[in-house]
Image (tube, rainbow, N blue to C red; front, top):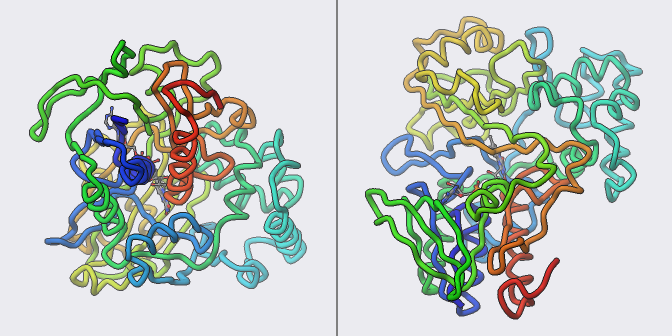
Length: 433
Ligand SMILES: Cc1cc2nc3c(=O)[nH]c(=O)nc-3n(C[C@H](O)[C@H](O)[C@H](O)COP(=O)(O)OP(=O)(O)OC[C@H]3O[C@@H](n4cnc5c(N)ncnc54)[C@H](O)[C@@H]3O)c2cc1C
């Protein structure tokens, strides 16, 4: 069959590679200029790549680790145990293990014990079924207590989801706390290595990758599905017909491109991810992750990549992400990187007294729309299946991995499930999930 796969992220590339392995004729259409989607990279120095947004693997990312090994990259996957902390009252406190929780002085000893018991319970709870319908905010406040809610959970939810913090589902919080490990994996050369290998394997199996091809319309016709894409430096604008189309774009975007009416209950609009990436001439905190609770700071996480991966790999530069999720109309990501840096100075001074912008060798800003769905308690009921109302058009996206948080692992796993589904469906649109 002739397949078009829209999007060259983890999901699109894995699905395309598997379809090509099954002997299908596969074309991947990607609006950007590189593979990897949200996990794609930029060059920090000649042929030294870094993700635009901080990325690591968890030891529980089974599908991703399997794929890395299958592509022969296993020896490049290194495991680290970097330090994760939260900022409370301008001081950094370690919070990444049961023992660090027992020493977490912003909370009283009884509150620490209560939080430890809650986290222990969530780790052993095998499914989130019991938690569906509850909001993370109310559930964590009830079980961990008010102090832990104000200091940690409520504030972290607020930092990430802003005005929507109180609607976020506890099942999603369960998945985050249940799935994640203290051990973090990172590929030598970055995840760029993974996406290059996937793209190469796809091409080796006869697939095609068109960069600069922004899909503008999808229309069923007698001959199959017509896909129209705009032109760029690398491809000409054209329309081609495929037997089947797999869209890895957000469901609302796929509906719009294919002329379907918006879903009756589309939920809240997803958030934009924003990272300001700094290259410093010295370490900032020496800590990999600093969660920045509350909404009074302009960023919700400070991730010092080179507190995990040695700075020598980047020519001695210390690389720090300042990350946030924002509403699509937020002003800060539109500003030049140096202006964003100026807005971040009070936070950087709180993290590292004496911080000076003279330490900053380079600042780059990245943002990506539709990067974080608002996973409210009604989210599960709105998750679409792989089949759409348009015969021959399939939808597989990171918006379907709930209750898990987005992650390359879950996109890879979903791609494998999609391809199994497509093999079961004997003709376009024949089976409904
Ligand atoms: C700040 C941040 C930190 C993260 N940290 C981690 C982490 O530590 N570990 C981890 O595993 N995951 C992490 N993730 C999540 C991870 O990046 C995603 O889950 C994963 O990359 C999603 O892959 P995908 O293929 O499903 O979607 P995407 O990567 O979004 O791929 C979709 C692709 O479609 C393309 N596209 C969009 N519109 C069109 C169009 N009209 N025509 C053609 N192409 C189009 C896009 O350019 C993109 O390449 C993080 C994400 C963010 C935002």
